[in-house]
Amino acid sequence: EPEVTQTPSHQVTQMGQEVILRCVPISNHLYFYWYRQILGQKVEFLVSFYNNEISEKSEIFDDQFSVERPDGSNFTLKIRSTKLEDSAMYFCASNRDRDSISRGYTFGSGTRLTVV
Amino acid sequence: GQSLEQPSEVTAVEGAIVQINCTYQTSGFYGLSWYQQHDGGAPTFLSYNGLDGLEETGRFSSFLSRSDSYGYLLLQELQMKDSASYFCAASNAGNMLTFGGGTRLMVKP
Image 1 (cartoon, rainbow over the protein chains, first blue to last red):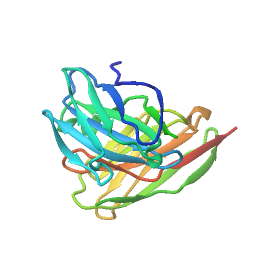
Image 2: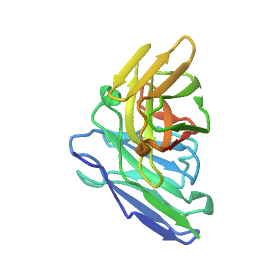
Image 3: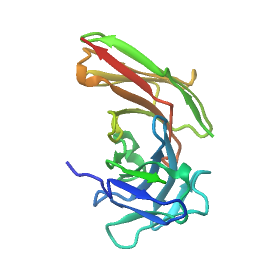
Image 4: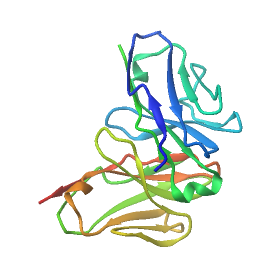
């Protein structure tokens, strides 16, 4: 079964440093998403991306965050200057088209970001 | 914005049936999805309701009532491996998901 691949699985960084989280969505999918989950809490939407631009973003996705699809396969989330409260599990997800919501997103296994 | 409420914990025994309820307050509501998440794992898709009524997928069923802003996930013939967190999630027209706080299901022998 096709998978969404995320790297690294765990990233530890110092406060104020920049991090880039990487995702390889499923190859024929067109819609890409980043979500995050602080330990023990609910999954929160960050941003959606389609046709090389942001479709929607949440209040969490402020100027410290950016997304990019630098080539035909990777989808990245950059946090410019990390804060302690950015510590969370970050999930990438994709789906094929708007109508495939009925088949659900495919989530990657996540990157656990720890800011110290 | 959207907010979803679901119980924080449910306990049941193996072989039993359990229902996890979800109520929502939304703008631009499109449909309700259910995801399962084991500790340390990614959410995995279980079911989606775009229309009122019941959707059945094996041991799992999901129900939606738009007029009541309410849905539920029904798990039958519970197995130990069903112990996990279950999230309802509302989608808008842009397919953005807003998740509920999750229900931790503990299945006991």
